[in-house]
Image (cartoon, rainbow, N blue to C red; front, side, top):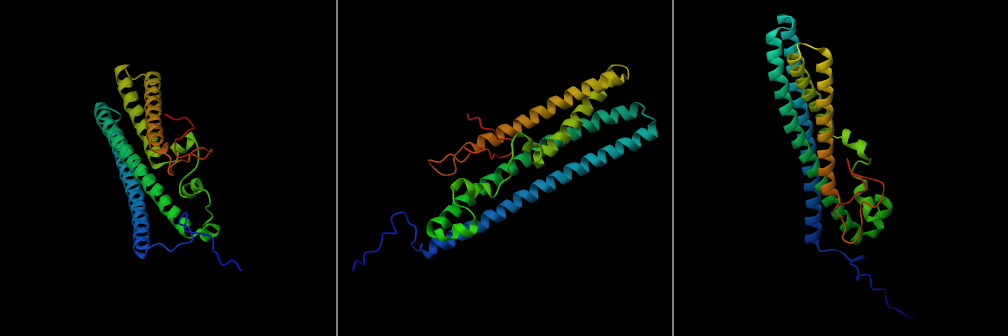
Length: 236
């Protein structure tokens, strides 16, 4: 009778990991989940503060327009408030984009830890619905193409910031052209469109830079159609 058992330790599967390793991995997983929650909370908080500032500024501008009957004080205040809100929007856009990238990094590290679980307990793959390495991270992130960039917090802030920049440009053009509505609209649309295109391109480039690296050595994580926000199939 042959009592020889297959060697299940060749790749580490089927063996019990050291207790210290299990403790470290589970603690790290919990810490990364908490860090993800923090980045999401910060992004939401910053976006809320930005929207509150925009709302307050526009309400103040409307009250001033009513009080001064759209006089010189209205234009002076508008030329101050719109550039200020645009600046606040730009810094908010940058920070929420950084937070999104940080969250993506935490997601990748969690996916690596999940790989450790599957390596030492392969029977879990049936219940966790994750077999291939690329599926482990795909479960935790949004999917989509270029349009996905508009669905992120940074994309939302970018759209509002572009509108504020266009409003500032249109107001300035209206004053310079002797209150010509056509000139104000033309300049406003051009400025807003250019600002929006630049912000979306900037976001797309930022996501592309951090998304091209393979999560698992020797494997192309992004060979499928499923992308991160603003990600396409082009490599640097």
